[in-house]
Amino acid sequence: MKAPSEIAVRALHVTPSFAPAWCYGGLPESAYQFARHLALAGAAVRVLTTDANGWGQRLDAASMAAYAHRDGIEVRYCARVARQSVSLELLGALAEQVRWADVVHLHAAYSFPTIPTLLAARLLKRPVVWTPHGALQRWSGSRRVGVKSLWEKVCIAVASRELALHLTSEDEVAETRARFPRANIELIPNGVEIPPTLNREPRGAQLRLGFVGRLDPKKGIENLLAACRILKERGALDFTLSIAGSGPSEYEARLRGEIERLGLGDQVTMIGDIRGDEKQRMFERTDVVVAPSFTENFAIVVAEALAHGAAVIASTGTPWKEVERVGCGLWVANDPASVADAIIKINTMPIAEMGERGRRWMATDFSWEKCALEMIALYKNLLTQSGERRLATAHQT
Image (cartoon, rainbow, N blue to C red; front, top):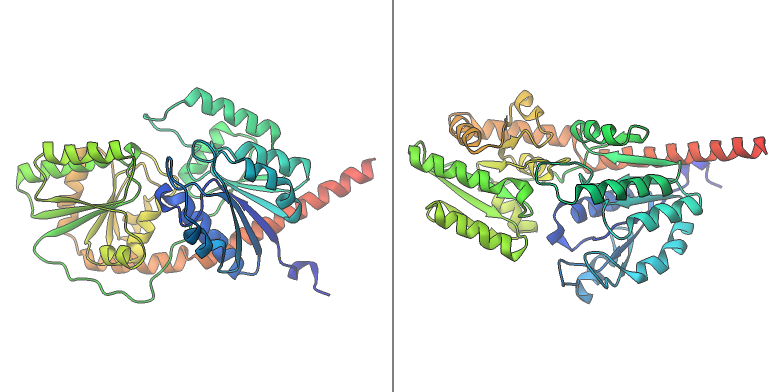
């Protein structure tokens, strides 16, 4: 018989979207990588999710089959019937899946599965790790703040006492602590895949800038475009900018219109979604990746760029102040003038050496293997606390 410490933890991950619904940006990527590496580290992992793949779109059968039993994970895709994640099938499967689990790991915040999952875990006495993926943070463009505050109050009311909020950066912790003062908060960063080998294209006469991510107003892309216009007007340097990612069609059209209005058609190219080898090739041929977001809980693209040996410019809306201490990038305000000045400054710096330093840093501190082991330790700690609380309650009665 195995000792208790050797028994695999059974973790149920509940998320509104999952691989390969990459259109939702960092959430399905992070949920998939955590699930995959937890399984590799010895946990038994199931995922309960929907087949959502953007507004009005659903994953096809072949896409779901490719991930349903992959990397030691068992994934159940439930039919989405409304909005982004409303699924009656998921609701019907929830109790059975929660009973199977030792720990429930909930992803996202303001989505259909959130409140039913918190309630089911409480009724069935299962501890919960809740990863909001930055959704609890606010910025000047945040919408429906009043509705979100009410939603949070309901979540707190129905949640189990064995609840840990899993956050990924000190900035996210500080902002969340102010609104959830009694919450048990655990800081575990996202990990990043470290390519074993790279084939970086040497820097040429042009400075090759890149943006990679979901196209959304909070990403500060308009400020980056305005910074590029400043660079063009100054004639400060020869540059190109590749924008990789997708978003709502009306917002993509707005960005294309802005590129045209600013006269940047010769410098800026929108290349759409990229994945796998194509994404690696973009990082390898990019000198500096720019992340000008208004707010981010982690900004995985910064870690990905560094893992691929590219230098970075990250806004103060991201938690990447350490890039300056490590010497692999700049951390600046995300207004157009500050971004333009940062691009001019980094153009004079040893960009290749900076990328190499960043890659070593990612391998040391941000490997998915390290993050998975920290998460399993959190699961086991919650299970221990839960057992002790139940034992104390039994003694009292």
